[in-house]
Length: 356
Image 1 (cartoon, rainbow, N blue to C red):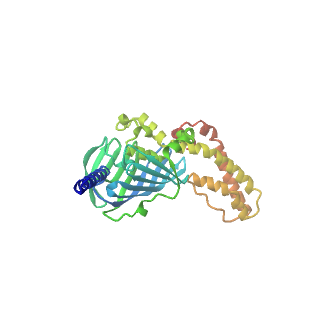
Image 2: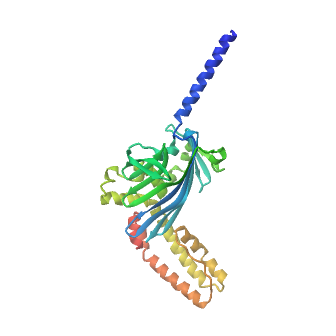
Image 3: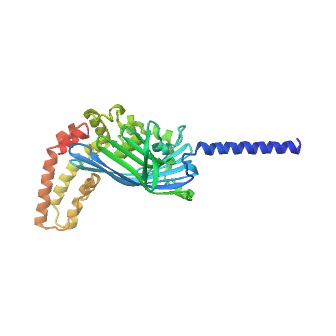
């Protein structure tokens, strides 16, 4: 082979690889900005039942580079039920997308789930405008973004980058709104890393304890994410009813939204009663402040899980002992009178009525 022909082959090969590389970069160009960071405030509220309200608070951050081919979304905060039912669900999540690979870090189990997907950009799913209509523009964090709306959902995108997610359904409002935006900045590799947890493939996870996981209801924040991604079926929403505000559609949606709270309460309320009885019996026997606080240690932990703060005991004498015993007697009697109703409650609406 002549040197000229060899040179032609090398040039052709280089040109082909360059075209393929450019095509690949174009395929994974999600945003019109090469890199950036967006900070968000999370908020929300609404009436979950007649006796119980729901509040959401938290923060989030989006980091991306290579036009969105590599992106990291972090969220943390709390969803609280207040009123007849008291519960606090804390959440912390991190999802990294690198082209067709998604890494989802689960902090509670300290595992990372790795998933390959033919439907690209799952971390950007919330930014999709499928089934939404462009309705105008608005100013957020000093930028004018395009507003897209659908049944109960509003999104605002700036050059494809999400600055606002909003849900308004049956009296429940959830908002994820940008508070600070910086584009064309240096995003180093260490700023896009997942926690050093053990990594397991999606297929392997599905094969372990699938029956138990399948029955576990999604927490409130996960249902909000499903809605923003357009996954109405998983959220228990009848799209045909969302604009009609029918009582049936509202109750079904709120019961689905509160399903995890309902199941947690059904498990914890009997534990609370048992702990109250044990604490009362213990307090009646002790003689010191240290021992009295040890008596309520488990009770304080259970109440904390349910979103209720129980203070330490700071003084201990006969008078203080009687005060605490009387208070516990009242709480035990009150909870015992509701246990048959609690055991029958099939959803958050019925359970909330039991506790009013």
